[in-house]
Structures are given as structure tokens and as C-alpha cells.
Amino acid sequence: MPELPEVEVVRRGLARWVRGRTIASVEVRDPRSIRRHVLGTEDFVGNLEHSTVVDVVRRGKFLWMPLTVEKQAHQGHDGHAADVALMAHLGMSGQLLMQSPSVPDEKHLKVRLTLSPAEGMPEELRFVDQRIFGGLFVTSLVPTSDGGPGGQGEAPLPLIAEEASHIARDPLDPYFDQADFHRRLVSRRTGIKRALLDQSLVSGIGNIYADEALWRAKLHFARPTETLRRPDTTRLMACVRDVMNDALEAGGTSFDSLYVNVNGASGYFARSLNAYGQEGSPCPRCADEGRTGTIRRDQFMNRSSYTCPVCQPRPRNGRW
Image (tube, rainbow, N blue to C red; front, side):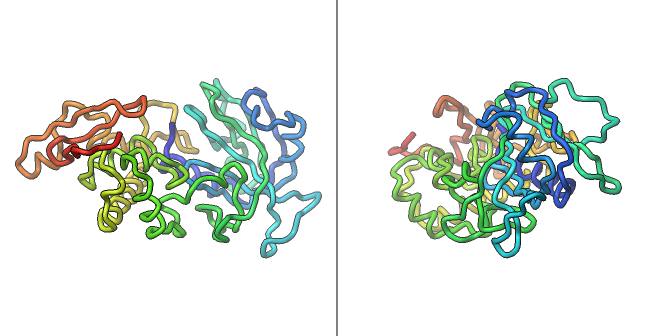
């Protein structure tokens, strides 16, 4: 499942190619990929054709494109006409690809949006999904609860896609409130990794980046949240941001061909993982500091957690 860095890579690519362009036509090749649009194919197409993409916005792993509608421009919000959005859920294998019409259709092409011509830019936005866990749908935009921008974007509005309105801000969001996060974190009385995966507390962190950030912060995943002091939380979130920014520079983490950016290229952050998936390998930090630590794997919430037992010792009173 793509995590925040992978979705942000896609967002930045889309913003470059689609922002300000009009959707000329829509082809739905597999209705299963718009099943979340409960009013059906005709309504989905009708909402998109002749609308213009205002921006591409992300909060956590949620991605949406605010739209203006040429026929009935809904003015407001500082002059911006955008109260609906095209929501994209990538699921396990969803891809948003920018292609020229001359490029043959992908085997698992589900939806094609043809955009207004722009010099030097491909004209088609294609949604490709092998496993059909993802999808597209049109949704309403609602005011944010704190009055700030809905998420990361080029010119974000104080609006958020309705389906994303329940999740917290993510660590890369300029409006992320560190002090509030600490207060809520220590009141949870759970393990630190379980808290990091709670999208109502902080969004966008999945299993890979939780393990990598905890390794960098020298914290075990079962450390009780109520034992964390403010400096611990500050250090942890700094490590979360560092690992995510490093992943962004590498184009995200790709373990197979299912995650790619809008140009079809895979990310290569998997080459830089220190803990996740490294069971049995020497801990890089311990090796550098002359200690002998070996990455181990533990079962955690029907998945795995990877830690170094030397520099991330398990707490006696751990909470799993």
C-alpha cells in the first residue's frame, strides 16, 4: 500500500501536468474502478467533463483534485470556484499515469481522462489498476475544522475532501501542531507504533516508515506512549520527517512494479531501508559504532515490525 511519500510523489507529478487544464472527455473502461461513485458512470462522467483542475491536494495518503465547473462556476472561497473534487484512491496497485494518445493502452487501464492540449504536455491522464482495490470518484469539499488549508497543494484552499475530513494532519503539513500531537499521544496509553499508525492522531504513516522512523529515533515499537517526554516526541517526529523527505528524494519505495510515479518510474528508497524488511541483517548503526546488533522481526497487528534489539531495546512494560 503506498504511504505518504509515494502519494506525495504522485501529487507533485500530477500538479505539474494537470493543474489548470480542462477535462475534455472521460472514458470509463471498467465501472468497478468508480464503484465508490454511487451515482454511477453517467453522473461520474457528467461531473468531470468540461471541468478544470484547480489543484492537486494531499493529506496523509488521501489525494484529490479540486474542480471548477465551466457551466456553473460556484464562486466563493476567495474567488476560487471549487466545491467538488476528483478523489483518487490508489489502493494496492492503482497508478495515475500521464500519457500521450500515441502510447498503447496499458493492460489494466480502467479510466481515461483526456485533457485540454498544452504545449509539451501529454494529453491523457490514465488510471491503471491491476488488483482493482483502488478507484476514482467525485466528492464534495467541506471546510477544514481548523480553518487551515486542506492539505499539501500548490495553492491549497481551506477545504478538504469529505472522505478525508476525519484524519489528522500529516507530519509534512506546515499546519501540523507538534504540541497538540504530544498531548494527544501521551494520553493514548498504547504502544508508540500503534499510535503512529492511527490516522486520527497523525496521518500518512504506514508500516514501512513507522519502522524506519522508530529505528532512527532509537525507540522500540512497544514503548508505552504515556512514558514519552516532550523531547522524545520531538525527536521521533523529526525522524519521521527526515525519513519521509529522504524517501521523497528517492521517488518513494517500490518493492515491485505496482507503485510508480506519473511517468511510470519506480522509486528506489527500498535500497536505503535500515530496519524494515532487513531481518537477519546487521544493524547499520550498531556496525558503525562497533556493536553487534542484528535486525529482528516481530509479529505486530497482523503484520511485522523490524527493530534492532541492541539500540532499540524492548521496554519491560511494553504495549503492543
